[in-house]
Length: 93
Image 1: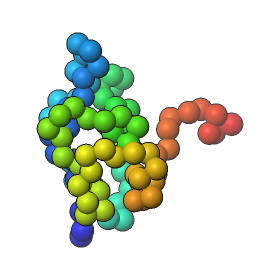
Image 2 (image 1 turned 60 degrees about the vertical axis):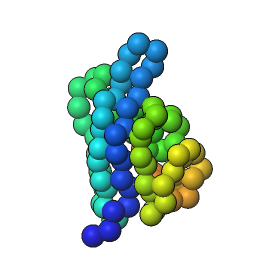
Image 3 (image 1 turned 135 degrees about the vertical axis):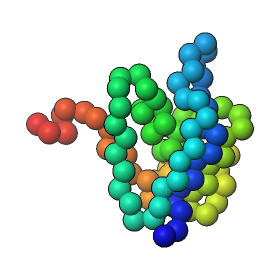
């Protein structure tokens, strides 16, 4: 299977708060993923980095669709095939 998205050494801090520390993951083409965990563990921050909403701290490597991205944008992530369903109860009403 081909790697669709590769994240290496993803760190994110907000002032004095470290939201992510050295996260590395690979997502293969055709897979569907769900991130689950306790409140405050960094799920939303990681998803926002993957979808181009946030930029990771220096030293991160993001490869999407075979291309290295230093400044991934929301439009670019959608164009490359990333779709995010945000947790919102109004989706189910």
